Amino acid sequence: MGSCLLVGVSLMVATSSPQALAADPYSERFAEAAALEGGGEFRAAAELLEAELAAYPQDYALVLQVGWLRYNAGDYGRAIVHYRRAIELSEGSYDARLGLAYGLLGRGDRDDAEELFALLLREAPDEPRAKGGLDAARFRIPVIAAPTVALTGQLYPVEGGMTSAVGASVGLPLIIRERLLLGVDYNYARFASYGAAARAGLAEGGGMNMSGLGPGVGGGPGFGPGPGPLAPGSPLLGDLAAHRHAVYLHAGATWRRFGFTGHYGYINDGGRLIGDAHIAGVALRYSPLGDITASGSGSFYGDGAIARFALAWAAPATRWLAVTPGVATQAYGGEALPAGSLALAVHGRPGALWLGGKGGRERRPVYLHLPSTFSVDGEVRWGLWAGGRINLPARLHLFASWELHRFAATDVAAPASAHLLAVGLGWRSHPSP
Image (cartoon, rainbow, N blue to C red):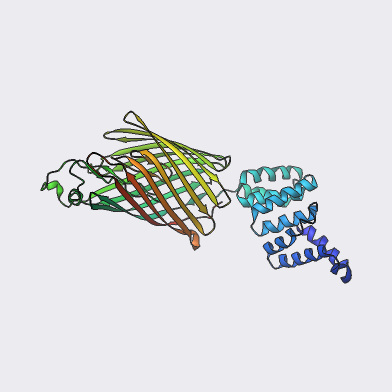
């Protein structure tokens, strides 16, 4: 793409007198950029020539060369901008369109790149650069695995006492040929003994007890209905811990503009907290600008069912910042329970940071994207969350998160707050396509 241009520039420099060359800043900049490019300093060479664009905005050769340098520097977004400008100036030159196709491929827009490479090959069937680009655009990694493991901890201050739970979660999502999505998540939690819970005032009066929030960044146990009134001294108040197991399965497919996933979850606690529960749901994604996600789920417990519908938009405010407003409603006990949320996420090569909050009315809400099930006997009125991820060598990353969920007061209990913590490690078998 840029080799022919550099040859022309070299010939021009070689045939010019030293006095003429010294008097021509334009040629000097090209010579300096060629030297930087030869040393592998593509970004510096691009910045040097970009400074000349203000004085020569109609110079096709200059714009094309800057696009080539930006591409080699890995600045694919800027390379695309320059190649599009070169296409305008040249009324669709082959080299400019070829450069654009490679820029799109580098940025991950494979479908657009494949379409453009195919068009270029129809125009020039023997062009090796277009052939190589088309093969690269059509290549799909057979299997991408991204397992995670996490430790979770929860604190529940109730009526002056405190109860707690500790647990662990394991997740194994798979991406088949960068299109099909398959995954399984398992989470385990060990809850404080019934004796400790009763002494904290949970058992008597039908107060709240923990049942569990599923795995994922920010996952951890939540609340569920208490074991019922127990008389002091009852044998059921012995220090017998409750164990909760949850398994979540999901499957779907993804394209650049659209995707969908189906979800199923099963929760078992031996009948000591909320009993068996089945969760089913589906999520749809549409991405014209950012990701718009609509989801619906049903939670089926021994004491009834709850339906939930949610809509969220991860809007790209800047290249590094996404703002996600969301709304949701539940159908429970003949009532519609509305809620809203707002989240911010900053992401880049070092990792990511996120924070958010919610408010409204929620009972045992299901969050498919974690995946998680927040089994609740009381009513959640508001919540906050924050977390982060640090990317490490060898495609590893560390993550940690904190959540606060505030429950409304009841006739027998004051307002209560749940604090959920998670710390984990993840790995990805391949870089992001």
